[in-house]
Image 1: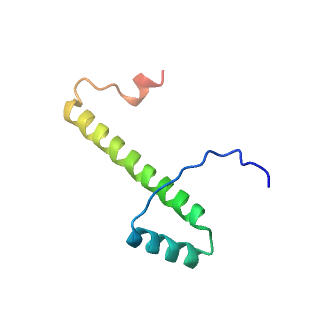
Image 2: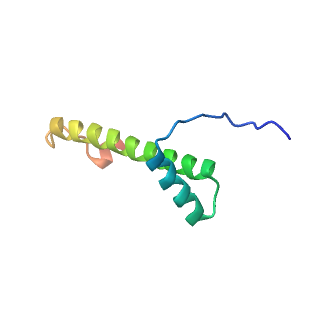
Length: 76
């Protein structure tokens, strides 16, 4: 068996999460590891989206159309 190049992570799940993950992996025809990886990736993307949504909301609070640069001014 060849060692993997990718880092590994051990996670402890309660029985309900484990059953749900097992069912999802079976339905998708993938391993538990791939199902967990995909869900973690999706969760991180959602987390990142929420972060940037909040950053945009804060910027909107300070936005002033009177002081904003026009498209032409920005791309001279």
